[in-house]
Length: 328
Image (cartoon, rainbow, N blue to C red; front, side, top):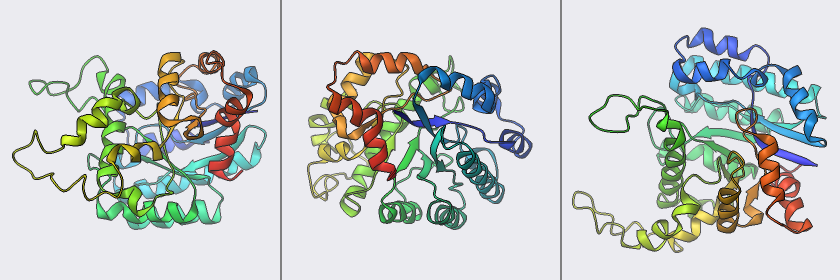
């Protein structure tokens, strides 16, 4: 069996609800409207049938609710999304192993209530957050209760990159161009979020916390040298802020903490990228994902099959790790 651990859906009439609450979805809205299986179950199932014994974990796609609506509305829509995903998974257990609960992080009181409702009462397999909260980094005290709660539940956090064309490529321009905000911006977002959480000491406080990073951990595996030995001189390039105690305050060498993250194989079927990421994170911290329906499923499966993994590692990657993480 294949468990695709990071796929996206707008369940039921959720896209209509979201569009009504946030009518100016801009580029992301255009992209979502063009991808039929993100909301059409019949089309989704037709595509899934091509892969045999294949099931999905579902979550909402971009955009983050907190980016496009006020906190009260975002919390209300998160509840609606979780209700719809729970009902859909219950109705189609042959298709879906579960869902990652949606949250609106600009309302942390509401987000924590919804986390406990979705995970503690409704059986969500974890929660999805984004790499920033409406432009604010995750290494803030207000977000610590979420990490503490998920460490207590011993269930994963799915971390999705968030960045739009409003972040320019150059200081001389007001907006990003050629969709570089997506192609390069999303891996950058993931990498920065991971690094900020490491330097914040998150894994010292919650060493068993499980965070699944989308798209094979962003840039981290491919910049191993810069992330590891390159950052050992943290502060040596900075004159306006003192970083001298950041690394020494951690219980382990900073580079070791990056191996605590989990990474998925949603790399658009890129064999070299998947192979590099697996060597960095290890098979036990890599999970099968295609980013369905926004990226090619068949090509991702072909890329994994081309790696020459033995049966034990292949089973762990495609099924076992997901079952362990989500306690299936």
